[in-house]
Figure 1 (cartoon, rainbow, N blue to C red):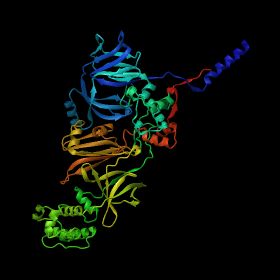
Figure 2 (figure 1 turned 60 degrees about the vertical axis):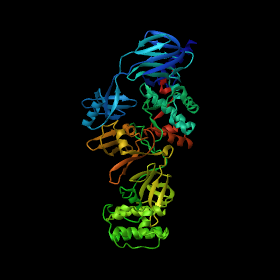
Figure 3 (figure 1 turned 120 degrees about the vertical axis):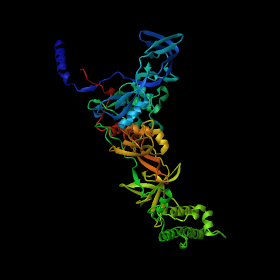
Figure 4 (figure 1 turned 135 degrees about the vertical axis):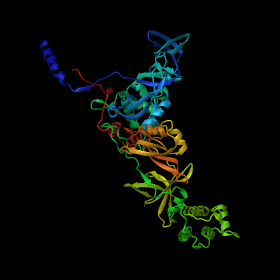
Length: 625
């Protein structure tokens, strides 16, 4: 018996160093999630355990916690990066970490006004609030007992703990913060995930897409430094639990993404807008999401006044200068084109004084289609709203005046006919109902009325209206605020100039806003640097702060401007695509891939190229034999 045992033992010892790696079970890791910050909080439990230093007591009922806000100071953000080495510090600068980003901050100012003055001096960045921690105690009341402490823990008893009326799994840690009371939820990663309700759940996603989402969120939660932000993960405790996502979490339990033997950084976005953003890591590349295509179309030679552009698009005239006096030959040419376009079949020449002669000829041409008894031509023009009494008294007829008269005449005759069609994009060329589009004028029909557009972001398949010119070609397109869903989401947002200036003052000390200019874009087309131009100074916003300052869904956008009759900017129009940062997995792209038959592992491989899946939270140990 001994002879048999010794060789086996000897063989095992020799063999052990060459055993292949094997995944072994690992204890479920816990996460710390910041779920509340405010001046006071209430925690309810039954036979719950409170621990504050050496103090331990069981309580049933409500625990009341209160603190005063701490002192704050202001700093100026100069840049963001996912790796601190990319941030170059100068005198007065320092680096902090917020979530997965490193921030380059400048200065510590007790008053916001001091920070604003410093921004005026350096001319870039925007003030953000940095809270200074305070060592003052919390006031805790439980039953008849009141005591003071800097921090405490609460562990559940017979029922789940409740914070301000909401139930949570796991325990709480409570500490003082600059806003008063800060409560973190400590629980295992799987229960945490089940309490998350990612936005994609609203769109009835397939299970495979949700399994991919579970893996991504699990990996991201373990990768980030505690405490996690509840808002970032859509975490709301027991009330956030959803059967579909809970099932996805259970099926993928312990599975995480790795790259180079380390947890991968796995950001995700609701809608990438058709192309994901490069993330500065080998596995976070910019990827075509293969959704419907979009294109930015430029308007053909715009004027400030919408009516000028419309009559030009129809091919009735060409305005060289709206303030230039109209010549008699050009007046007759324009009227001839108008007569042919409306089908009057007759041309009435301009006779006598130029302005009244033009209006009289215009009236006679209109009266062929819309007669009026015993009314003189000039009276007819006034009755139809084409001109006013003051127009008859003024002697000069400019190109701008004449074009407005023609526009109003077309409106009175109801001769501006918009047809309906859909945008088609083929090899970077635009078609409507199969007809190629070239040299068109763009318009939009929003809540502020009909107006010209310098440029527009149009989506393949987007419904539009179009107008044909005198030669029968499509010469004008108007969008109607269409917003697609999913990967193809297109959004539009308009600001009056004064309203936008007021909003921007919370980020930069701008006075008398003049313009907004895109300085830099990422390779995926997202705006990475935006210049805010005032009458005296200019300021720069970068990265995520652009989206926050303008309250836009994403950084993938174009800017259009609206002008008043004097040619001054009166408003800004933002047209963009996607929702969220745009890095990593696109939720709507995952849905599409799942519907096409891809499993969650293939979805993850598509968005995080070069990464690989591991079970048991990535823990690898050598097995013992």
